Length: 351
Image (cartoon, rainbow, N blue to C red; front, side, top):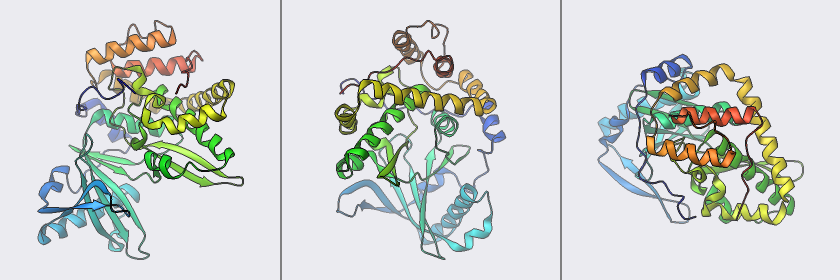
């Protein structure tokens, strides 16, 4: 929809000393065997196509043989740190099958495909440039969403696990011809996802920035929408940027809600999700408070954007709680306070 794109390319912010201390204390910071810059030594690349011959916007990289041996061992060690808490015995069974690079996006990620030699099963992880606001997004996802997420950081390098699922845009192209019952479940999950993003202020959730995880159930399927891109955690100034319902790329799923759900049902699902977020916030209150203290003291956006978001959220919620906010962290805290006080105002789903 008009006016709902990022204003400019996202600016990356360094990790502050206070945030670094928090991450170290919670097992997110570890000394890594290589840094992002060391991945830049490739000598060539080949465009990576999908099964239908379409360009994926990823390129498979080629490295000099001498460089490749050391690089692959370091990548296997990183996988062990991420998945087995550093138990390096698993490395003898691992090999790097492919290293892909993507110019699309803010963090210019490398995607590493790892294969287990014992059973030929494969997994992926990502190496990205550091961005403090992105790490806040990952932490808030772990604390306030129904999803746990693993990541590590060291100096200028961020390591993220792969989140399995069908990309939202592919899901809407190929997986929407399902039963009436399943269409209702898809619409319900989008409403809950919309609410989670708005409460914790995760922006830019257009279709290619989330996946849909499908779980077969007794009657039909269960659906879970999971964010996979956290670059736009509390950065932009426009309120609607934090509501997935306003991106035209999501219209196909929104239409399901219009076709199958009443306003009363939409409100019920919103209230259910807010109750779940409240429960998660209370159960992780110590860690969440530590995180928000770091976020409040940190700079992860600009004054103009902060002022704009304060004004738009104050108008939406009809409250003056945002008048004293001077950082994105304070805005997130104010949003959560409204949630805990049950004064968080409904966002009307529109097409």
